[in-house]
Length: 269
Length: 273
Image (tube, rainbow over the protein chains, first blue to last red):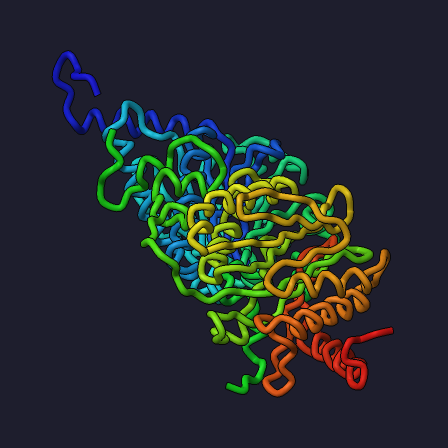
């Protein structure tokens, strides 16, 4: 940073930077990350099919972000590199959301203080556990502060009224369809108190970390499945897990353990 | 700005660049790449994997491997897996130095998944085959010292709706094979067998029988290839790639196919027909 021509107190510098980052974040549409009975759902208002706000990081870890696309895309790629490298040199089970959240926090914190402008992003790193109690949702702010959230997070432009709505309506163990309907209703409401919009499935980016899936738990939900999950008359309450591609597949990428079932073979040695 | 600081992501992680994991490792952690190691002079004695057969059938591709790894005249491992899922739509079988080959498979699997996550799209089948060729090329130095790795790669081409096979040589040459291919020490015998048994339009069960029979023929004449081990119940690894993804044959199905082949060969050891 260049020297300012006259004295500005550190408090003022930090406040200016924080205001700058907050303003950038507030311009974007909101993202909701919320737990349901079988995993964690990500719901974003995003009309683009290609520029994602929600992404897979690793087997059980997902990523969601609001703010400037180039900045959170940079962090997303860094996170995938971090996770893949760790999984490659240790083991897949050694990649955790906590480790990744720490790395992100340190990175965001350093950028906030040292670089000429802070990142205008807010991100969530979520890891689905074997049970709902083991789910982890970390929320990271532009200045590197981390919060460990329980159950749900909303971020972006109109996060506060959405958080209030989630606090009121969310309870543990809701099925996916109810969670999605609630999230879409909250995303559509007008923060200024005007009439709520109805969000079409094509205006949404939805993905889940489904704890019942083997290995890679991340899955995008779109098209007809999303439409029927969002419809209040359709009985579909959950994404099907035993689709044809999963029935007999036991694909893991660790060459030594890709077929857990094979260990049952009696061995004569 | 330096990339140092406790716990933060190093600058290399945030550098814009390719979506290749291998290229990223080459810049950031070259010591993790098998091709960047310096080796002592002289031969290295290490377990070798042996025979893999692969063939197409109506609706997909089958890849099967025996379970033996040898070190000279010693059987180093009798239940090693040598056929792996590379990703949801492709499989890889390995022959040559087992340790290096498994490391290569592991790296290749991460490479494909890494690309898929960063790009948000599956790599094309030719793209995957070419990435693998680049990795083999990087191993040439070690191959010169006797640590050869020669894989065979097979996948389901979602655009052409068919199984396709790619073979490699030690210099990283990548060749598309038609109908069937074999690699490893018993490959000559297995290939002869496949030539006589394979025909267009095989169904899944017939393909399984043909593959088991080809491996049986390889084990018959090559001491390094493991035959079906009826006493220990060790059967070949068999993987299928079809339009909906990779699956491995379950044990009873392979067992039944092996029993059939052994029964048919009793009193007719060459399998003449």
